[in-house]
Picture 1 (cartoon, rainbow, N blue to C red):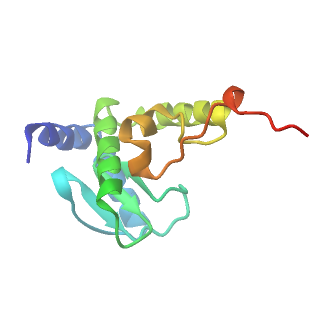
Picture 2 (cartoon, helix red, strand yellow; picture 1 turned 120 degrees about the horizontal axis):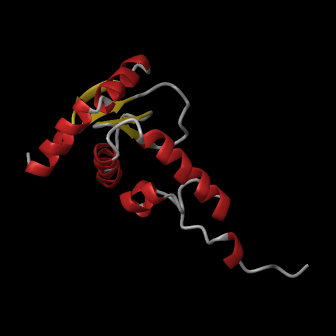
Length: 140
């Protein structure tokens, strides 16, 4: 494993986000297996929240399905790095603020969310919605 991924792995254990992700996976009935670059993939997560194709807590990538595309895993791996740089749990309120900002400026939780943009909107399956004030107005 590359040095940067070893750093991410260690940081997310120390900041307790990976243990939290493993706890969520166990509580949600997900089955885990090792993924690329120190990630832990958790499949068949049962709870309906959050409403994303997948979500990441620390180095744990959780999904309701039993398979993930390589692009989605890459997107979620970038979120694992964000967890490390945000020192763990501060990621939650920061992500929430970024999501609220995105909803406020374009009506979608991901299009202008800085975390989703840095993780790759296309890889995560997010649309690129225009800003409210840049949308063309339809004549009645």
